[in-house]
Amino acid sequence: MDVVPKISDIKNLKDLSTVLVLPLLCACYIYQTEYILSLDSFSFSVDPDSSGFWYYFQIVVIFVGKTVWAAFFSFALYMAVIYAYIYIHQSTIHLIVLILLTFGFVGVFATDRINAYLSLAPLWYYTSFVVAFFLLSMVEQIESDT
Image (cartoon, rainbow, N blue to C red; front, side):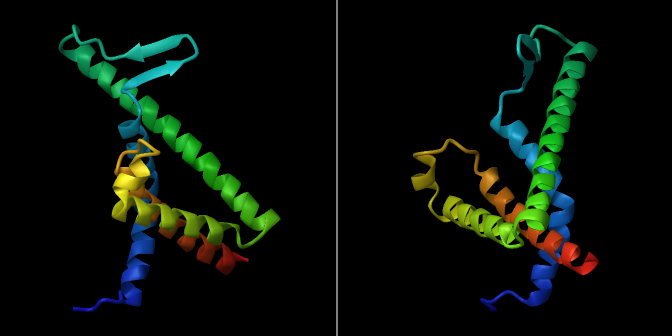
């Protein structure tokens, strides 16, 4: 059994991360928050007394709303990271990758210690790995384009 991963496995992880990063971030957001849409005084939730079409319509509206919100926020954060990489310092993404990988390893191997301070769903720790590999693949793409 090989302990050290092959280079081709890391390349596959980078390719897979470009497909999985946004759906995983959206799933983490939906999983971590309540199943309700709210903005200031407006609130929309699933009415447990409703039945049939209206019940499923409420579920779909909340799911789509939360997915769109998480995707928009994730994209804005990604653009800020790319901006920092290009205009501030090129080691920005490498530092973020280091932080994300460390967070993922601490979450996977020391869940009890980190959950004493944070009440995060375990899916966030695995998502941090995917985001880190995604950022590494984007760095390679940016460097090859310039």
